[in-house]
Length: 126
Image (cartoon, rainbow, N blue to C red; front, top):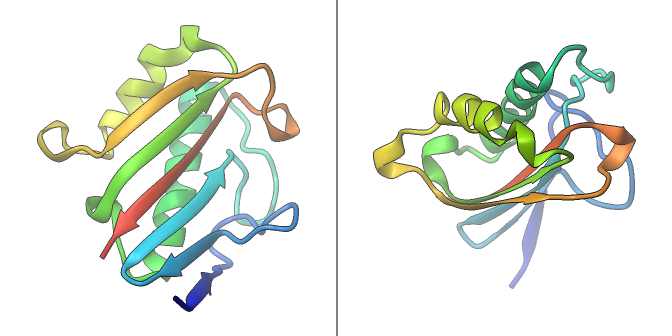
């Protein structure tokens, strides 16, 4: 099945050999996003600010594919400190309606790219 690379300047450019997202059929696989601005700079602030930026990056990439967060069926959240779970969950919940929220997992990891506190990837179907 042929696939299409999704790329937007409204989210940070990839920092390695990967795409912001790949569309295969009607499914879009969005690479893990970290709290960098579209200009490629780390967003200052705490886990709340970082989580908001990550979700804004996901929204920008989904928009480039013609989709929204309402089309997301699965998210993967990677955190440096699971002690931040409640805060991340509160921010995340402001973007997704609990009644129709996607499937997800949240995993604590030893380290994330550029030593950020949170990374989120998603899969959307349009």
